[in-house]
Image (cartoon, rainbow, N blue to C red; front, side, top):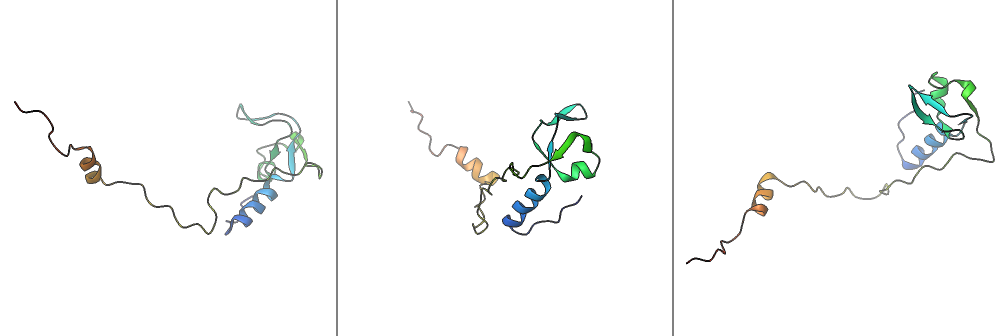
Length: 106
């Protein structure tokens, strides 16, 4: 299943709820020998429909136990872009170079 690219944070949250809100792991699920889902964890629809996880390993998510809400975006949609913290090589060299020779002469 390919999800459309969300345009807003609200659309992204809804897409995640849809993808993870239908199935729960009925048992511990390993994929290629590595634990992917513990029993009770939400399992994405695409894993079940794509055959990555067997339908026998999942159960429908109950209405009493909704899918966990996705984390809120760290940056609000209306926030301006963060300033670049990259420094030029010259600025780094000037900062590292001594500004005055304070060595005692004598």
